[in-house]
Image (cartoon, rainbow, N blue to C red; front, side, top):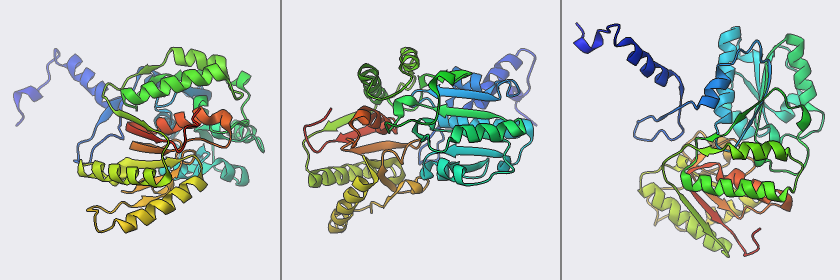
Length: 369
């Protein structure tokens, strides 16, 4: 009934097992394209080591990763493993992050997902295990860490915290004591960004280490950066424009978006990120007016939505901070200069790391850092 090749001999078993391991140790890439062809990334050795831990022996774990190393992917996989190992329901595993868009993206299929603010205001009697993501951007008010630790210890559960201090986008404390982040593991293999974008990110991380403008665990970050590696071999584009007026920026964004759509990209491949929510609203208003004016000329309607719409076929227009933890193939970064000058490079790094293959950075004036 079956072809000869389907009959396994003892000699074929090792090759079959190697192939099986490759299929199992992978995660679906966000680069899976619109033609129905799915791309799978192999888990890096670092990611595999973390996911194959004896969770009974590593009930508390701090994972410090560089931008683009797949921290959120590992966080989601750890929750799946917790559920399988301890036979939990989704209500017994809590995922905590800072921003509503990332919370919405994670959803409630494999866990309860909440923002830090909701966690501090709510009661979670059924929760036994907690996974915290993007902890570098948490706030220290009301001691979220102590509350989470007490909740988990009461149930003898699992408590893992994922963070990337290079992507800290505010100059305040995050509620973690840097000297007590143990046991600690690192993710240093950057698997998400094209080579050109990785180079920009490396340069920004070097400058953050040199300038030391905020309170961060710099010695750990220096060691992390020494081990950093860009695993993505494909090339991409990094384009920087300066001294642009707002109307120029709008024209540039519309022209390039239309060009990308003609090349076969989808609306859901594109994000436009601004320094603040207010800046995003202002830019969006001008952009919408121009889109309405050009309506007859455009073959494809460019639909804009805030980051909560990340799962839909729309162009995301929001702030860099609110898009933290999410990603797109193409990112337009509009004047990434925050009010808090000390986190300027961190904010740009956060925006750059959201782009898989194409990054456009547009500045209003020549007063770049």
